[in-house]
Image: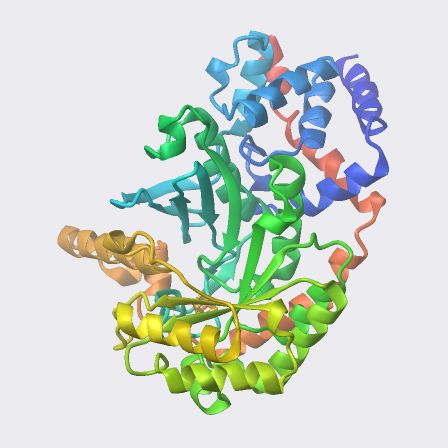
Length: 478
Ligand code: SF4
């Protein structure tokens, strides 16, 4: 009797979804590796469609899903006890099958300049980093990770020095942003900005993919997460920057992809000749060198009409002389990139343990900027390093957490070979290019993503409903 009634409700729930929503949901949840455990609903990342499916399948009216959604998204509340207009039974059911987050806070550092840096532990022990940077006018920028580790091997980068572990799912990427957005609404992480003093609210306004990993080597999940950030958190695509080391095939894909919102593109250039760039960024030679890269940026500008940012980490005595600035200007001219469509961002290097380079001083930064602007008319902005007192550069906090855990294990006499934590996976792991090749080739093909069908979505939703009913009878009989 109960089964029949439930089944009817379940079928009804499916027909509530128009096709576009169903397809969209599939992109988000189909890849979630946590879906097999009992806590299948992650309240920080669940879509409204999935929430409705589950809640109506439990026999509650659809407006209850709207109410829960209102708590989660509009008020930034994931603590079920605080949801005081939700019936106790529904809160019990949600408690049984949901968790407030899938990213456990492993470490947090706060800088004098208000920057907050976090290391999160994922469901499988992987550590990833997110940074929140406040600005005087009340805006906040979230700098987020797209992969656990990175296969690109840029020699100056702490993440590159660790090697690659795995792709982040779209949920894990989205949650990094959603957590900061929700906490800012709650003012949990508020920095004393001028806007706050003047009574204006603080809000998450910008997102940059400049944390751990190469976002264009995880194209599918990054694209899905960006769609959710724009649609569910209301952050405009032009406020989102995807920063790449120069994965040429996926820059081309992004140029014409109708499913990718119109995000800003930033390219980590750092050198103006192949000879120098091959040394600092091994990915350079793999994607055909600077000719290929600059050619595809020209196509990007012509097709999209959007400006490209060229990033330049200034390393004292290496790539920070006026002569190097002239080489960069000539490269831009030779590649026929329109000057008004290019912007150069320079920032002194964030030093890391595995690389001997030092940040350029203020005079060298100014000389570099002046050479580009005054001699060539190319816009160039010096950026301030944020959170330098807390090692906010990508990969640095993760290294510290791993180091601390390793020390603790040694003190406790635990032999590393017996450990199952990420410390075991990361320590002594060497970067190999084979892994990088496999990841990206997989992303270029991506047949599963292209062929996502409503049939697959129905199966996924059925599984979701099934997974949230396993112990429901027990709950009812209590
Ligand atoms: S700079 Fe970016 S692309 Fe290069 S190794 Fe670090 S995370 Fe990867």
